[in-house]
Length: 459
Image 1: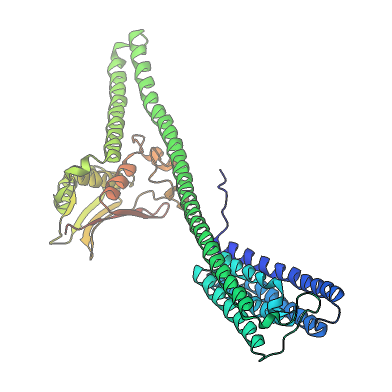
Image 2 (image 1 turned 180 degrees about the vertical axis):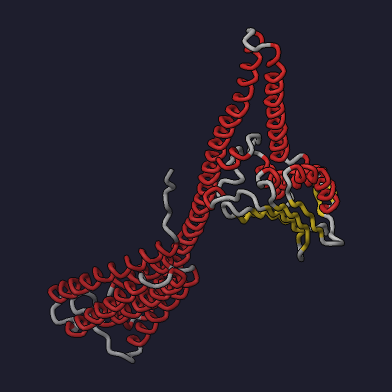
């Protein structure tokens, strides 16, 4: 399911800053239109060449702002917020200065458009941190106060709007004071109100963005969990099919043997042979059931709670004594090499016995008569390392990828030894990994295999 994306704060700031640039193009056109309209209503009152030059200057600056904004789009994301804040701050400061210059050349205090100071103040409140609103309110108040004061004391010439207002209004102290007071109060109130609302919205926007990111993270985690559950369900179904097949075939064989005897198709002298075959198949079933129970216990991890310090060398010696006779029956050279003073590992003793039994019995089982099986046990800085090496049938690279899968047996293994559940190596892998170790295999087809495992030392 697709999660709706909330634009980042950087994206919002970029959009608003570029919106400010587009708005300034409209301002340039509006200034020219108003100047032309005022000049037609009050002929020869305004310095037209100067006002047109100011509008042209605003257009040039705005073109530079637009070029820089496009350049920022290609910058690294980590720089966006800082640079867009700087770009917006410079633009608004320039707007305040330009508006003051325009007011001077269009009547000063006589021009009612001084209320336009509220526009950059409100814009700063929306785009920038709250402190900028008060800075620009102070800047606008200072510039306009300086302009009106300079005209009042005749430090700079006053542009009178002939026919629009009475003369000498700019020198009436009460009027000038009232205008300045009302403007300053309006600017700071607008800065407070707009910045408070904008800050609350930015806070809410930030919370929404964080919530969206959290939801996206959770959605990703849920998607991974669903995929994992689907894999586990598929593996469970496949495992059930394999177990059903492995259990059904021997039972069907035993049932067939018994039916032959019961129906009188087997002569008395052959009955013992059929019963022995049935017994072998039953023993195979018991071995399979035993391995399945071992797998289940390992998966539930209950036996891991019985972990105690175990001497891997002592367990190896007891297993090797049992395997010696099997190796001699196949005329194999069987040897065990154990490094002295090996530290114990923390594990269930029965699991370590299963580990050695499976690895050594496999090596003996799949090595041709006259071959070699060598078992070594040593240590490194962190692990006790066991190795079982043989000169048996070996494995191809493709077979190695499936070696630890449940019920997997190669065709060569089946041909050499019919009996086998295909669960031994799966059990070995789970035992080793359940105690924080690892197991790996090196093998070449027809030239034997080398099974190695490492278990953490007891600290």
